Image (cartoon, rainbow, N blue to C red; front, side, top):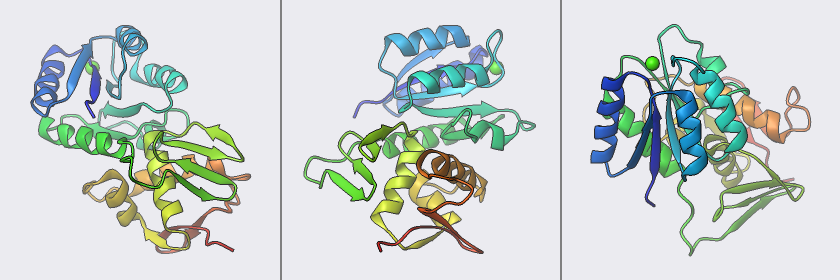
Length: 230
Ligand code: CA
């Protein structure tokens, strides 16, 4: 698929450098220097992934993220953060980003992360079985839609990928590192915390009571397991 990336970053040098690197990797790239401008671009173009800086003049990246997430749940979002920022908050329920990079970063690594996220967002090839189900859930892997009792739940690309991985492997215990590898698709410098945060978010969306999860079980000392078929 041809994937369109929107960069929202006020620092010209970073914005241009990221843009050049992504274009070299064959992405279509649009860019904005403010959050307001970026939201306008996202509303008027088909954007797949946003690279969003937190520190922006005017509306900051958190606010931009909230607005984008509420309007486009299937959008991939990678946040550019400073060292001091709280990853739990960035990846938490309120913002729901798919990935983050701490400044200063290597643009080659950012490009790898954008590539990995775009792979995660690819739709299934037509020859594959289209519907996966695990009562009361259904996944349509052509359209990447997730249903519970027939109602579509708005999952982010990362939540969807985790849910799909689990539903393909009921009863199998996954280590956090394995989930990191299989979903994010690269070594995330050992930071398996983002797995926990994303599982928490997914539970909040799919479980009846996320404090007593029924479908996504915690396996102590290992990681997580999707409930086995009864
Ligand atoms: Ca900035």
